[in-house]
Amino acid sequence: MTRAAGPGVALSATTIVDRALELAEREGAAALSMRRLGRELGVDATAFYRHFRDKDELVLALADRTIESVLDRLRDITPDTGWRSALRRIADAMWQQAQEHPVVFALTFARSTGGPAERQVVEIILRTLQPLGLGAAKTVLLYRLFMDTLLALAGMGCTARTLPPEIAEKDVTAWSRVYAALPHKDFPATHKHAPALIGVTDHEIFMASVDSLITYIESQLA
Amino acid sequence: MTRAAGPGVALSATTIVDRALELAEREGAAALSMRRLGRELGVDATAFYRHFRDKDELVLALADRTIESVLDRLRDITPDTGWRSALRRIADAMWQQAQEHPVVFALTFARSTGGPAERQVVEIILRTLQPLGLGAAKTVLLYRLFMDTLLALAGMGCTARTLPPEIAEKDVTAWSRVYAALPHKDFPATHKHAPALIGVTDHEIFMASVDSLITYIESQLA
DNA sequence: ACCTGAACACCGTTCAAGT
DNA sequence: ACCTGAACACCGTTCAAGT
Image (cartoon, rainbow over all chains, first blue to last red):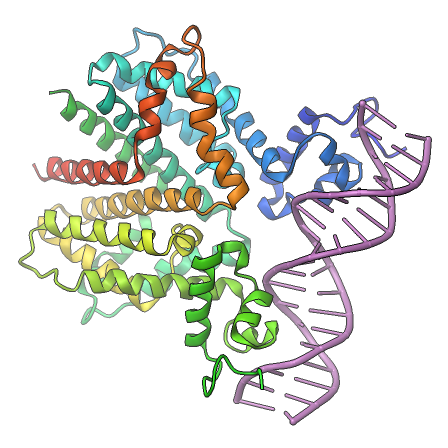
């Protein structure tokens, strides 16, 4: 019989999320189709609809699953952890999530799952900012600034890194092909800085952003 | 005859970009299909392939087209414009681009077009940062930090705003439905701040980010 | 030189039928 | 209660044929 995902393993939401996560990260977002996932699970493509309303619900479930590992990395943050270290640990955990699950991160960084893991992460970050005594309006603005900036930066990086191979190639080489070749005459600044620009890594930028955000929050304390 | 896009208007790359841009922004990314675009232009879906290699090349052409209006808004920046005002004008122009062409912005903010408009914008921003005398390494890092942060923030916003209607609805209401309803007992910080969090706008965040980036660049001058 | 249209190999999703 | 499989309404792209 070819019905189940394995001997004695009944199809369930958890099994589907497990396999879908592995499939997406292994073969890219394009491979995350119902027919492909059904093959992976040994069931018909449409069996899926007994467990999820639609594909988007699965994608959000994948996101919440990857947020669980973020949550694990934040467990040792206590009320005694300084807010700077706490924010750095949160940023680190987001960066790691993006590196480990770039396909799902690219698919969902602009979304809200509303799931259990996401809720807990939100609570932890708000608890970090709350004691700064900035007042409600400033606290929520800085929360959004911090979260949105880092989610967006990491998400943009994952989007670029997980483009279909042919397209990714073209994009990555845009700087070395076109920008490095621009003439000094009309593009003096680009001509001068293109070589160095190619060398800047996403991680450097992300870390500079964390520094910049922490500096900005400090400036708001006065 | 139904061959041409209009009386005397032959099919050309420019005509295709015009119509595709209008179609995408009017009806969303899902409407930007070859068959739909062909109908719009009054030609067969596959006539397109006489003018572009593939759909991705069209998408990048749409991006470069929307960057032209950014360029127009930066024309009055001169060597005499202070770097702070210049960066603010650049940020404003990017924000406007995102508001006017959210669908194309969402599709391409993580990409490099390598096109003529993009090249000129890059040159203008590098010319703004170059005179600060930060040295090559710091100049390129701050260039990437400034550009990537603002592109990513605006792009994430456009992605959220241009989701298919059913999905967008679910996402937008996640905060008001789930977060505002979390109990004080387990989620005291979220319970307290959820109402205010719902009210923070993308534009406030974007402007706070511009402030934060300029402050950070200032701190690097010392 | 450029466009057509059939065709290929895919999508997400619905629904009646099976067990 | 859950899964199957045909079917529907789509995709992007290729290629031989038309003009």
